[in-house]
Amino acid sequence: MGKEKCDFVLPRGAMVRFFDEAGDREISKGIFVGPEDNSEFIAVPLADKNLLSVRVGDRVRVRYGCHGTMAEFCSEFTEILESPILLWRIQTPSEINRFELRDHKRITCVVAATIEAAGKGFFGGAIIRDISKSGARCVLQLGKEMGSALEIGDDVLMNCTFPGVSGGKSAPGKLVEVSESSTEMTIGIQFDEAQEWVPPYH
Image (spheres, rainbow, N blue to C red):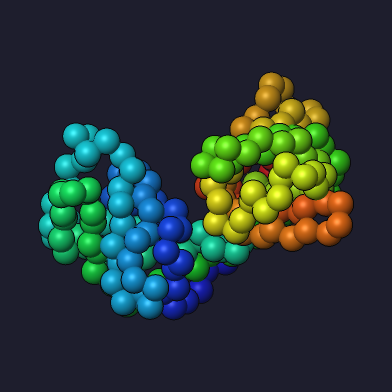
């Protein structure tokens, strides 16, 4: 994957992942809740707090996705608040690496799928129009019950049975594109992590 430097730009509510400094072990997923000007990095970790053992001063590697790229930086915990909810304050990064996820080959296809957005109570049928290991573009038929149920930033789960791949597959991700015509809604999904079952396999 190609790598370059980028600025720290992260929308409030974005999903982030925390790893040990080497990047080998995931500590927790989390949600960014810092200020809109990104002057501070504050997140709500989603793992069971009883299983977390981080301390102020510990080094951490943070990864998050945005519009087909993955950003990554190393920093350290500067404050851990436990009440009323667990919050992690991390030193604002001075250097961020960006990886072009679309180095993964995108293939055109017509595959039936379902899309779930549990936070919205949404479940609907879709057609996958193109897919790569890092994301997919799907088309849904627009119905009255759908309205504007899906929005950029929503967490979704894509389920499908892909030709040539045994068994059903599920790919969690986040919506990075939502557009509507009079009869269809097109959504772009960025997967939370690379889906190795998606061809090609070299």
